[in-house]
Amino acid sequence: ILSSSHHNTNRCPHGHFPTTKMTTTIDLYPDIVLSGDLSPEIGPEIDELCDEIKEACKGFGTDENALIKAMAKDQTTRTKVAMHYEPKHGKDLRKLVDKECRGDFGEAMELLAVPPDVAEANLIRKATKGAGTNEKLLYTIICGRSNADMNALKKAYFKTHGEDLGSEIKSEVGGDLEDFLFTCIQGLEDEFDPEVHTEDKAAEDAEAFYEAGEGRWGTDEKGIFNLLSTSPPQYLEMVNNVYTEKYDVTLFHAFKKELGGDVEDAVLFALGMKLKPYETVAELIKESCAGIGTNELLLMSSIIRYQAILPDVMTAHEELFGKSLHDRVRSETRSDFEKVLVEILDNA
Image (tube, rainbow, N blue to C red; front, side, top):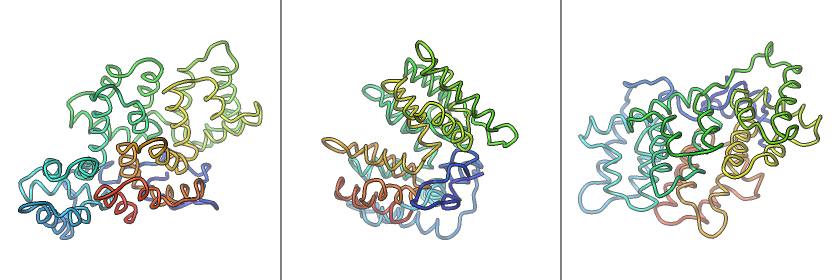
């Protein structure tokens, strides 16, 4: 099984991920989160980082540079710091950061001040409880996730906000998007099994996708949602190849034709995260910077949330757009907000 801790293995030329090797969707959370380890080994380096954070926030004014250096670490280190800071210094790290940092910079630092699953639970809360639902933020967190990630996220949401994530989606989202997100939340992706996921089955499911979409009057959205969410990447690639050979269009084109609005975007994103995850994230980051003004929340959440696979995302970004991710971030952000995002890229 490929997990985020092995994200550089099985690479092929041009940075494209060889999807045939992906037996399950990539885990974005580190092992410390997925294992539910509540008392990890805390080495002296975690103690030192906690002390550096306290020192950076001491007295009049904040030493933002020192705070960024101490907090923009890898996911495992950040998780340990988030767990250890309050027992060591008697203050909740997220609340401390909220008091010390402002604006987009402050929002980014708050995402770094808690474990990754809690950060995403908080982002979902923000996406559903603000002025109107932020559908894009919502579906980019929920769609295209591994079973392990989804189970951890549901637990974190309930623990942090006291509500069931599925019930929250049903109360805040409607229509086909609600149905698709609810299907994704179940975390029912099969692991690839060559005895089950055969070429014959791929032909059957390619036909099933066709019958649910282009081959019928009206679209059987739930049929599409179930097939997409339960199919592992390696198998979905087989289905896509059969579909393309038989109907002269890819599943991406077929779904684009049959669906519309937010649910179309969500389905295409989920399909992308299974078949071409690094390109899909690179495109999401570019999208956050498109048009007039930058979508700072989408930009920061994408870079922080996908930290585990950033090296491959950076490669894909440069190949797709002829520009480094560092250059994109520097051209779209400024001041301390720029510094913290660049620090995360530097540490990837």
